[in-house]
Amino acid sequence: MDSPSHVINEKTGADPTESDRIKPKIAGKPMPKHLPLLVAIAGLVLTALYLWDLIESLEVLVSAGVMGARESGGSLDPTMMGKLVGEAIITVVSRSIWIPIPTALLYIAWVPLRYRPRWFRMVMVAVSIFFLQQIPVGTICGLVLIIAMRRHRAIAVSPLPVVLALLVCTNAFAGAADLSVSAYPSIQAALDANPGRMIFVPAGDYPTTEKIRIHGDHAGLFGPGRIIASNPEQPILEVEHASFAQVRDLTLTRAEGKMDGRKEGLIASDCHDLVIDDVRVLENHSPAGAITVRESKNTRISHCLVRNYTCISIDDRTASKDLYGYAFRCIDGTGISVSYSTGSLIEGNRVEERNLRPTQAIKEKFGLGKFTKKVAEKPPLMNQKTWDAEYVDNWHQGSGIVVNAPSVADQTRLIGNHVQNAAQGIDLHCDHIIVSQNIVDNAFIGMKAMHGSRNVLITGNQFLRNDLWAIGLMPGAASTPENSDGGSIIANNIISEFGKGDAHWIWGDGHSPFKFDHGQKVENPPLMDVVIQGNVVDCIGAPLYKYVVIIEDGSNGPRGMHFSNNVFHAGTAGVANVELQP
View 1 (cartoon, one colour):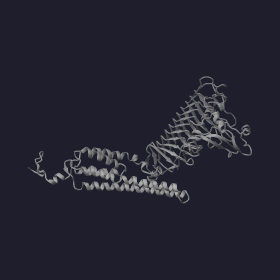
View 2: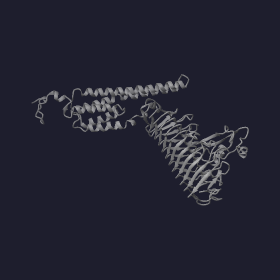
View 3: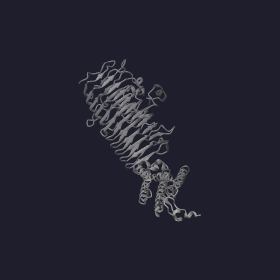
View 4: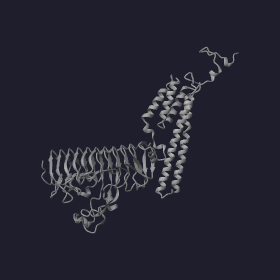
């Protein structure tokens, strides 16, 4: 009887030798001698990359410790020290665990024994590439392996090249998404370790005790994560001195019990071509803007949600010795604020307040409108009755959207936004601005432009449930002959349900959908050359306004107001307080 070593191969008729039976084969061919060496080198490279990533992470932790020590006067408190040590241990352990796994899986996948099933090899390859994708340089390792295997015809008849190519291409084109904050102790650590890179913030909650800082060109954060700030003395997120930075898709909010403060939710300053898109700023109760941009160029704020942004505050006007000279308790807060900036696009955002509404109950609860202090002598332009009563009606302060800085803020587009339950819906102190296709619902002032706002185009907007006025143009205290108001167009807007908002009980029926006012000071130049055409003031039932249009008189009253093709439902006293000129 023949021994097993002399069994004739029925398929080939050959008499296999012992070395043939034990020598590993791939795709039916002997495995090249140096293939395991290539796999081992790839594994070592991958291991080195993971170690380098580990060292960088530890350096970030050390930097955080040094910064914390500086801020605390040279030493860290035990709690912070324990936190840093714990994060270091977790980082070392978590990174070290993964180092041998890709190498082992690659070896199993690429050096299969003769009888190892093909499906098993495919699964191992897929898992290996998954680990390779965790760092961008892993793509290079994958390409080297594909070239090596194809060169030695090890995968000539296998679908593995297709699988590998798809995975590598996916990694190459989605490299940005691979850079995730989940690989770092904190969001700030991820930003500091990757300057100039976009960092992905996966879904989940990310508590912070300090503001997150984005600095430098092309940096940013994106993803569905929710950042929860517990320090009301700092903004949630700050972008500074950056060009082409981006903040996308995030939710920024504050922890329960820490929602009231004085700081912004997201603040950007000295930026160029900044993008803030689809960001939600929730429960940032502050007089400062929930989203604030300062001294920047070509910023885009689009498709964002700002909800519940106001607070109980003190409006201190004692520094104004000629107009005010007092401070008073108020509701204050702004949804989106852009100041000292040019080329801004504010598009498709929703700004709404649900908590603090101008009701009588809220007024009584917080003593709103009452003076908290005043200067010794009444300012010359201050109303005597208000001065003696030590009370003002305009205790609902702030705006849904503000574009500010006379003679500096320029070339702004404010398009397709929805502002609900604001004090002032849109507040403008700027030049060359387009206000179009916006909806302002339930604000005591729909919009106003003053303090030297010139060449304002207000067209195609909806203003409903406004109580003091819907559209107002007027010179402010900052208006000068070199920075005057006018040269504007108000066209094709619809004003409806005027006087049916929350604040009607404060202002009554003596006001108007359109208000064109004189200057706050005698020296302010008059508002001049405004075209008002194609607008509709719609009223169902008895009007809750005296006139549709009020044009104030006086030495610096408006001049050159041109009305045509408007549909105005008369108020209780008529259409206007003066004859409207075409």
